[in-house]
Amino acid sequence: MHVEIIKPDEIEKQSFAIITKELEEAGIRLPEESAMVTKRCIHTSADFDYARTLTFSEGAVARMQELLRGGALIVTDTNMALAGINQRKLAELGTKALCFMADPGVAEEAKKRGITRAAVSMERAAALDREVIFAIGNAPTALIRLHEMMEEKRFTPAFVIGVPVGFVNVVWAKELFLDTPIPYIINRGRKGGSNIAAAICNAVLYSM
Image 1: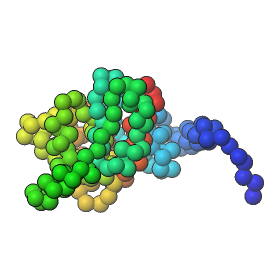
Image 2 (image 1 turned 45 degrees about the vertical axis):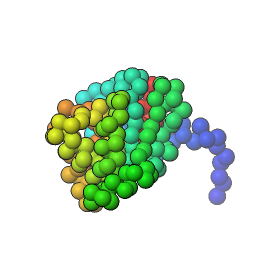
Image 3 (image 1 turned 135 degrees about the vertical axis):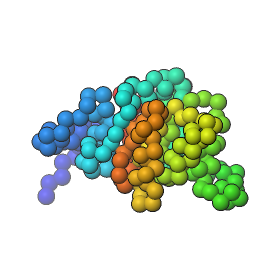
Image 4 (image 1 turned 90 degrees about the vertical axis):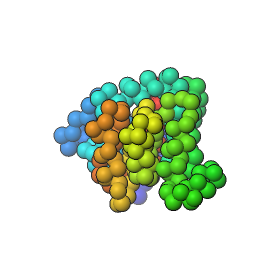
C-alpha cells in the first residue's frame, strides 16, 4: 500500500473537501452561516451525525464573533477543551479562554457543598467582570447550574456552547437552553465532548 506524504495544511484542505463532497452526496445542505462550524466538528470527530444534531440559535455565529471582538472571555468545563482552543487567535482579539476545574478552591468548595466542580466553576465564571462565552463539552451539571443561575436571576451568560457527551442528564441539560433567549450552539443527543467544544470555538475564531 502506497502512502502519500502530504503537508499538514494540505491534509486539512483535502479533509474538508471530502467532508463537503460527502455531505453533498448525502443531499445535506448546511446553512451558509454555520456550515464551517458543523464541518469542523465533523473534521474533528469523523462523525457526520453533527450535520443533523448540531443546533444553532438565530444568528449564533455572528453573535459569537461580535462577543469575541468585544473582548468576551471563553470559559470551558475541562482543561482538555481549554488546551484545544487557539489562544493565539484569542490574544489577537484581546481576550482569552479560562478553566477553573483544576483550582484547589473550586475542588474544596464542591466537596464541602456536595456538588460538582463544574457547577462551582460556573459560579466562578459568573463572577468575572466581562461577558462570558461558555464552552461546555463534558459536564451537564455545568449547563444545569448556568440555567439555575438564570432562573434565580443571578447571572445571564452571553453565549452557551453546550456539547457535553455522555448518558446521565446529558440530553436534558442541553435542551434547557433551546427555549431561552440566550444565543447558543447546542448538539442535541448524547454526542459531544471537549474536542467538539474546542472545535466550535476554533471554527468561529478562524472565520473572523
